[in-house]
Length: 174
Length: 196
Image 1 (cartoon, rainbow over the protein chains, first blue to last red):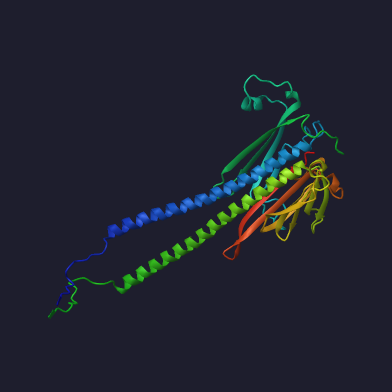
Image 2: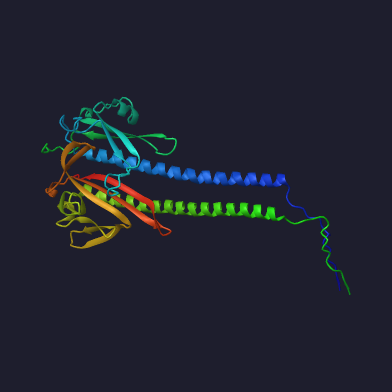
């Protein structure tokens, strides 16, 4: 049996500085991209939650508006249906005495009996329903900023049609 | 048999110096700490997102059912005030044309919201809609609109709960992640008007 151990059989060498720098650069780019991608996702999630809350606020206003009578002292009264309002991401009291309200929403409500704009957007041209004088467009608009470093403005609008003979037509004790 | 011993003469090759080893270990340790920290943080956030998704699904489902029920109802027949006295933890509605003499109720207790539905034949079914619910409150309003500092609102039902026409509900759910309560809340608010 012949055993030969020759440590000089093959010359081994480490990585060169250039190879290490290139590898480190690629790794840094990959990790940074990964981190930025995940961070962007979290930001997007937060924005989506703010959108969802904005939808809740707008739907609440449009739901409640159906309890107003079709009259100058309720539906068309700016003292009852104010043209502007504010709300917050966290409703008052939901965190007990914690005053953190999160993002602030600034909204407007308009009640418009002129359906021309609405009709031009959602209906075919030239069709003017005979009952349009008994209808109004209620539009709720919300504006807010995202609350992160570079504040980005957001704007959402929701509209609905209410009819004089469609909403609840009782005489409230007002 | 010929046996050639190993030659320990490395031919000019040398190992790392102590300084190189120390620097490499320091850099490696820092990278490892950063990697482990980032992994833990990302895992927590991923779990938070997953939890939020679950909670939001439950919240939306609950709100859909509640909206359908309350819109179909005609009158509030019972309610249970909470500790504040102005909000309620339980509401029971009826609509004789739909539910007969029975109705449906939503009850918040033990961090869970339960929906109980009574059918005209006297049978009832209960279902837990929300769990991990830290806060839930119903606020009842009459049909009289008013303009408060908060904006467009209605007069609270007060003692005349049978005059309830609008139900405002809000809740908050959360879960613990890796042993600590993390802010995975799913806040839900809505105002629902009875349509009958």
